[in-house]
Image (cartoon, rainbow over all chains, first blue to last red):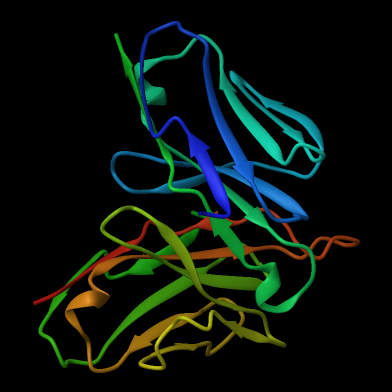
Length: 112
Length: 116
């Protein structure tokens, strides 16, 4: 079992829909990242959070430390949101323990 | 432009060759990383490095070695390339922020390595 599980693996939505992507993890963490990988391959960091909620434009990320769960929400989705969304966690501590552990990604397609 | 850059973008080579991928960041960041993304698009850390410490993921073969000529560069050298090394390699960097030992990472555009 992966230490970081994302759901769904694939998601198709109509433009304008509200989208939720989930991430569950089994290890204690010091931080959680949401990354976006464009169809061209580039990776952009969307959020880094360790508690609560963060918002940036139409994107909202929440985390529940007790439940070891995070969600990424996209409001008023648009075809340009089509990408792979990757959840990654960092365990507390230094050394190799502090390396990021990645989920397998959620492929989102937003149809016009 | 301020960014993390990698060269080359594409690299096609024969099995057994030795090759290097360069990474440069002009963001003034303290820590740099190399990641491998396999054919199933799964990302995995290979190395993280600041000017004090190199942290190696234990699953990385010793044919892979990072070399940092200065704080802005972390190059990846690969000896005796194998078919299984074909992947996309991403460099990233992150800043040191006072009071926080770990921060957001900024990724390079990736280098697609194909070993024939």
